[in-house]
View (cartoon, one colour):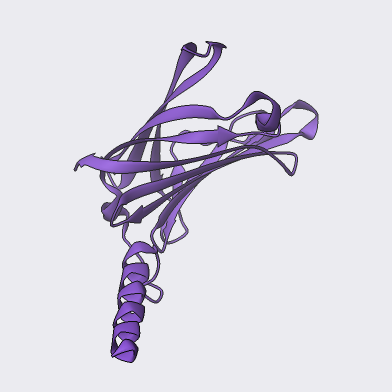
Length: 184
């Protein structure tokens, strides 16, 4: 009796894992339309100073929608840090970027992208598997650079957000969060 029970438990674990892990469907590729909608949630930010100053809590709002032949991605981050721990300082950052199809299949270029060496950020987006990735590269005076990457991965539970900011090859900040879909 234990063997069938063990086999059933193993099968259930396999089914749950396949349903919960994005990309579990052997190379499945989502279309950009799968990401359309409004997602809201929260997460935490880590930096090298997090060991000393703690983690920063953040709330997120992400909207992806069609825009002509391309897409528009809008996001707002609410940061709660500094000040009185019972009444922290609250800052709000919002951005909207319109992406248009590029000459590369499945790759979108930010409509406002410019020449990175002239101080204008270069941004692009693409879908790989279950993840919509946006990269933004800025070259600073003196040749230093900042590369920001937003990975937004869909699952049955909503969207996992990962933000990584790299400055001259070193990870300066990492933010992770979970969002749920609120509307199409």
